[in-house]
Length: 183
Image (cartoon, rainbow, N blue to C red):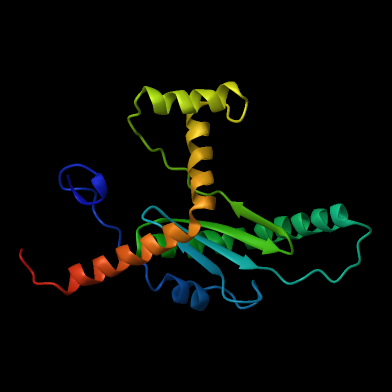
């Protein structure tokens, strides 16, 4: 098996994106966000989410505030579309990954056109039965939706453990890079 269980030879590694937060902070117009954006990176995609300036208006209730937040995010999305496309084009060339955008305002966060990557797996009958139970109960529309739901649930409930695992993997990668060149 190759790296990350991808068969012989594995998939080619994407370019290093460890400097992406700094690159985006330096590349984005200064008036878009109130602070440096949050940049989330995996091997397929970089998601850039920025905090928009707070609303100054008064609202009758939480629903009106949420609608105003969604409207402001929508306006930001439309007003910045051309610039975001150009910045994404540059970042895709630099980092070899799809670039997705989002904005946060108050309690509202919206992601724009994020990547949805297909994943293939082989499941034995007990695992398929779990997925079918979720479908039959109306929790998910399909086995694919049920699997995505299960992954999100694990991610929410195992966040600390997954964070520690990612840190350990980063340390292994640093040690591997520092080791002797056997090629």
